[in-house]
Amino acid sequence: MKKLLEIFKMLKEQSPILYWVLVIHGFFTVICLAGIAIDDRILMGVNVWIKPLKFCISDIIYIATVGYLIQFYPYSKRKKNIINNTVAITLLIDLLIIVGQGARGVQSHYNMQNPIDGILFGLMGVIVSINVIIMILFIFDTMRLKLMTTKSMQWSILIGWMVVFLGSWIGGQMISQMSHNIGVADGGEGLPLVNWSTIAGDLRVAHFFGLHGLQVIPLFAYIVSTKWKSTETNKIIAVTIFALLYISFIAHTFYQAKQGIAFLSM
Picture: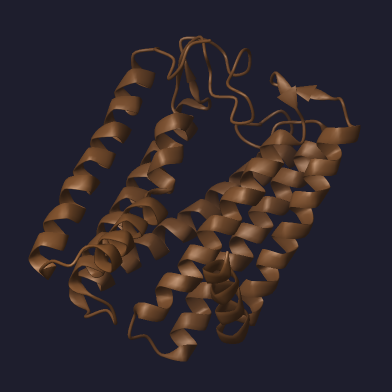
């Protein structure tokens, strides 16, 4: 908890816009929780506020991660601000669309029911594309620049960005088929909160673990670098093995979904 508070303090000092976007996300998280408690409307088998809540939490994690990791890059303050502000503001717009559509009781994704819904879904696609371009920038810069951290941490950050890009590609697969389930229509029986299908394949599983590789893999590298007194080469090997196992798990869940098999059956 102390480390998290230090990170948010650092973000407030170095990137005020990003910090306040995180605060706004926190405000909407409270709104979504209140909505779940008092609003009993159901959409696609779950409360209309569940999806906005998931995106609030996911965005907070991703935006804070970008703001934290960018400090290791030898960028100018101006470049850091441009990247941080672009990520924060675009994802805030994306969240406003998702929350707004949830409040209306309609789908935010794959919704082409009328021109307004189609435009909002298209705008979300533009926002995703902008952030994917930023991911690619980070991938190339992590390969070509010397980050202000250890070699094992830099290696983990590079793999983390690659895994996030993979997760985004899986998201593109869902957009191409205008659904996330395989074998049945979207909605229906699912796991609590995440609502991953328990009766058919669901691409959101691989998408989720892909998007959070940027936290999981560097966190593993951080634990290894602080707890294991060994050579940097051995730490890189450990990070590589862990990353390969994590990527293999994502590949398994993707294959599983494509075969129409539920991640977990209940």
